[in-house]
Length: 459
Image (cartoon, rainbow, N blue to C red; front, side, top):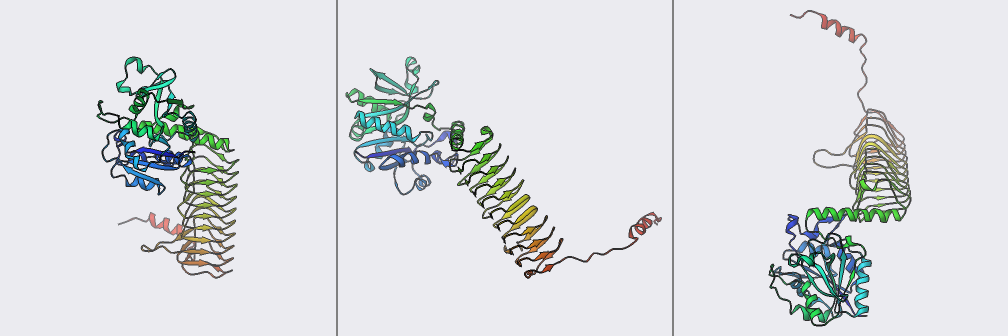
């Protein structure tokens, strides 16, 4: 089979985005816009050529080493952009993909390439039939074949009534493409070399130009400004949620749920309303993610319960653990199997062992907590001395009383007890009881004496 080269056009300035960031690097559901056509191209093409503008090092870096970048130093139109890719293209079939159309499916592009190869056409255009074609190039046919493509600004009133639009996705026979590009002129309002004009050149030469329509017109939606980005995001969000629900995930309120394309979730997990799950997050099976949770780049095992309004970042939660409500896991935290991290608890760079409990109102930072430990309400690891962070170690089955301050660096031994209200500044041996608080003073009759003193005349 002849080779397939994918040429991805990503040299546009994206002025309507009004951003310092290149348009194709703007995020869409956890991935840059350009990542979507790159993913499609990798699944189909033998080689990938990425056409970028000047100063596009970040775009090239994101694309990866398997992509061949070429620079369009002067932005002279889409035809000129494709011509810059010629030195990196192989013979065979050239697939042209826009860098700002992230909704194109692999299945649609596979169908386009298969039709092109089977028909042996000089060019095959991917079209879409839309109810509101304003702004898009119209596909003009004659006898079922594509005659030419006319841009919206150049279309007559009659042509503007055509609802079949050009998606800017094409397959070309390589030799026919390069020959036709040499005949394209820039005598138009923009002074640019349009790739669409190649279709007219081929048609006038008697070459076969075919077209197939995308089954889902939303695949033709591109991103040129922030409003279009929002519209595309809404479509992609729903696609992601549909895919998860088809895989066995219960999403109680899709309208209020945001889950990125990079997330995986196991079957029989239930997602409550107003949940955000983003980044490289993986959630296991039979979990419950309560209302208002925000999960970012976390790995969560099976049968985990996240009660409402937890914020979890770059952490690991093992199977059957329970978190929340209102707990905060900062990066590099690790909650072991069947452990509990309760309401208004903050963990930072800490490990909580199997079956251990931090039920409420605690800060645990730079700490290692063993198995079967109970940490009472209001316990704080005092890990920062104003210059350096220090570690707290709590061994298996230790019991930390309510309102304890553990001044790091400090170690609490296996099975040790800490009395409530203690400030612990020294290591506690295994099995010991440590109480570090001022002795209680009781002054009998003090309140009456105080009241009497207030009643005495002053002066």
